[in-house]
Image 1 (tube, rainbow, N blue to C red):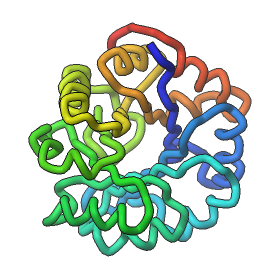
Image 2: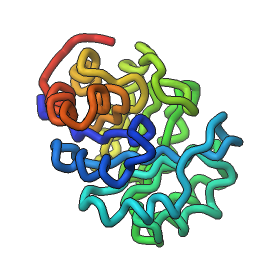
Image 3: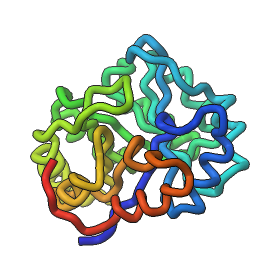
Length: 224
């Protein structure tokens, strides 16, 4: 079982030291930086605007994986791409025309991702699979950090992996929400190749980041 990409969510970082935090993540062996953007409307929280992403960009060479939990999402695509986003992932529920939104992300030169909430069916992905570079499965309901992993997500990971393989897609399959060293192996065994983790990475402060990331990459098979 190959080690997954680890994509720490800076939602769990020290917001007073964001530049230092993303630099520390790179030094600790993170693969991507996951940026949770919340608007207080689509989800019940407000987090990071494009100017913050722009300010963080010089602090690391890691890809920025920007998860847009905003509605409507289309007016924000260009701003976050210009700020330095490498991946832009959107929810089908955040705009009326998902196919067009994914196409626009690619036109902007970014990688296009689609996010499926726990209650969003895989049939949505079937219609746009040729346009996605990343599929993000939420293993919690979006809006807050620190939630517990929903165990039924493991079956959804398996079904999504089968769908991507059947379509010949090379898209990454990412899982976000309550991911820990105890369930990371089960997610990878089910078919995920990228894991978002907040608390599990940032617990213990910068001196612990490297060990926390190594634990998430370890080939474990424990269930949630």
